[in-house]
Amino acid sequence: MSWPIDTISIVLAIVYGSVIGFERELSGKVAGLRTNALICLGAAVFTIISKEMSGGQDSVTRIAAQIVTGVGFIGAGAIIRDRGGVHGLTTAATIWLVASIGMACGARYYWLATVSTVLALVVLFGLKRLERVIAGMAGTEERKHKIVEPGSGDKGLSE
Image (tube, rainbow, N blue to C red; front, side, top):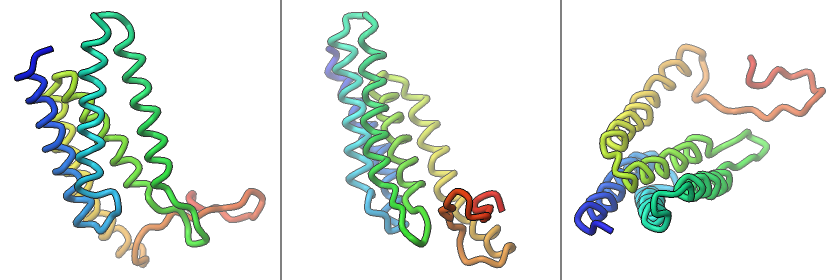
């Protein structure tokens, strides 16, 4: 175990998770700064531990797969379905992405983690503005995901 390098990995995971979480806080989302920082940190720590425990064997990929599954479960809990539609899809996707950035930090793929964080911010900040412009052109206040029951004749999301 390399303490200086692993410390860099977990500090970067906290920083990158916090940066993305900051945008979520600004957007008023429940999964904000601390949640995203902790998910990113946790994924980094699990990745570091799996590398150390594996001794160069296949178990690293198995543990990585379990991180993806576990975080997918957390993200699914962020998605809420009600009569008004489906909410939390971006939060769920962000949780999933933040975990992958944490895994990249833990695996010492710092360039991948950095580029992914920057691109995530471009998507979260930049495309939010674009969505508003498109919604304004379409005459709607904001884009909503509509739930359509089979056989209702409603085209739902395909409209």
